[in-house]
Image 1 (tube, one colour):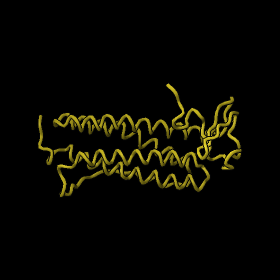
Image 2 (cartoon, rainbow, N blue to C red):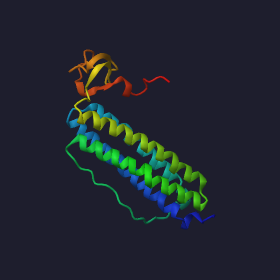
Image 3 (spheres, rainbow, N blue to C red):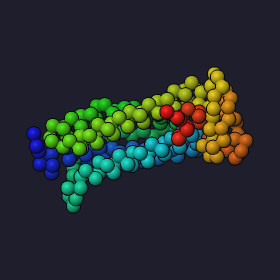
Length: 200
């Protein structure tokens, strides 16, 4: 069926998604600040990296609303309050929220857009849902490593990259201090998780 966009549920869902992504961006920026205070710079970097992607998602949803320029859209919605001193808890909450966006929220929004005849918008919901799963997996992996006290140690030798200068160390643990730039261990990440280093 074809529905007038200005009275569609899809219009409302776009505004809900825009609000959710905007809030997620801020929550992750706040979480990054907490990680920084605790010298967990690699976790800080992951939160900021993800926050930037959430900003892009918000912009995609917002641009779909261009036809409504000059109007206000009132919507209801449930949004999480995740204020914790524990970085581990912040990671767990972030993973939960990302998985919830993946399924059922954006899947449901995509299905409704498809039903109302907005195929391009449906595809945005479906594709961004898959990205949110990637976010959830990343947060979950880091939370698991923290919980196992393995954020900076491993049972076998592996590569560790300093996110500040790019130095790569091989060993069972990241060095307490980078021998190149003198930044502390909190800047090190497993080479397998470092950005722009994997090869296909």
